[in-house]
Length: 385
Image 1 (spheres, one colour):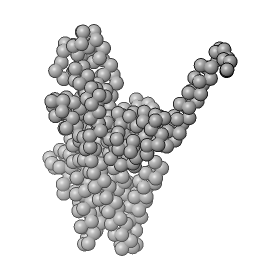
Image 2 (tube, helix red, strand yellow):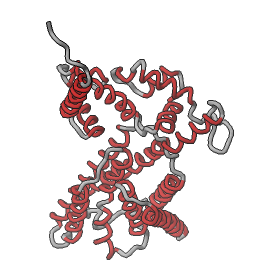
Image 3 (cartoon, rainbow, N blue to C red):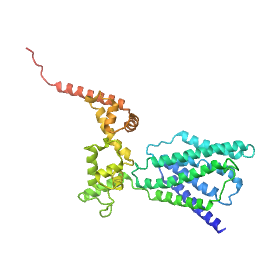
Image 4 (tube, one colour):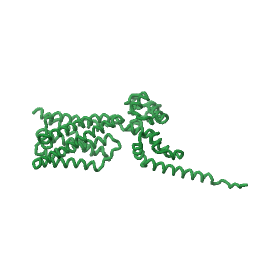
């Protein structure tokens, strides 16, 4: 009974933290974006999970509580996409996938007594989707980890990786249990209830810390650092305090700008932040801080693409390079293939490279025609002969 009391207490504390975070998101976050919407959904789902899987919860409620929880892997995957991919856009089909998983889980739960084979098939489908989404969440978390410049978001990836591995293990055990016995959606196993309760409380603490102690806003941090540097004659200081070793040094930003603007190191194939830090002879975390807080970039690839796209735009608008293929311009700027270049260019300008070149050359020609016409006004006619 003491262990069960501790279990219930941990679950109550975790559910309370998540419900408080839900209230904060709904009450203070304006306007809503995909990350906040999915964060609110994750808080509600996790609080619901903590309560519904507690010991002594009546089994009569399992037929509707467990199917709803079957949609949690979908929310987890979408939240990872929104949190770690700055270009993610929430689509209608994402909600349709969530409803589909819950609907199939409901059918599997309700059909257990009437059609056990149908119930097993539905549960197998839900477990398979959970496995796939857990793998996709792990891939999303790891794939963009090295290019992430936000310190708080890099720490959050550790928690997301642990949670994704947990979902992967649960979905895998569900798949194995389908060969014999009752599906977990009908008869769950609460043997690991206390460790799960402790894990939920740790996850709630991490979520609360990330919400109430977010990383500094890059634009505000950069403005404050540069303002204090100007006031002190070039010595960077934190707002309201003396010089800090963690502040973004203007000298580092100047060296970085020279390396990018004059030496054009962004053209180098396979350039990573480790290679750039070695070139500048600074630790990687200092360079990440400089690019994030000093220049306002959240992703290293986006930082490189800013210079690459600017060079490509200048080349496309140059009349002397009108016959140079777009692929050549993209490769010269540092892109490895035409696909990523086209996507990044259109995301930045709203136009394809060909459309941008056409409009830029037309505007250049119109400006030249106006200049020629203006230069001829007021000049006297000359007699010939």
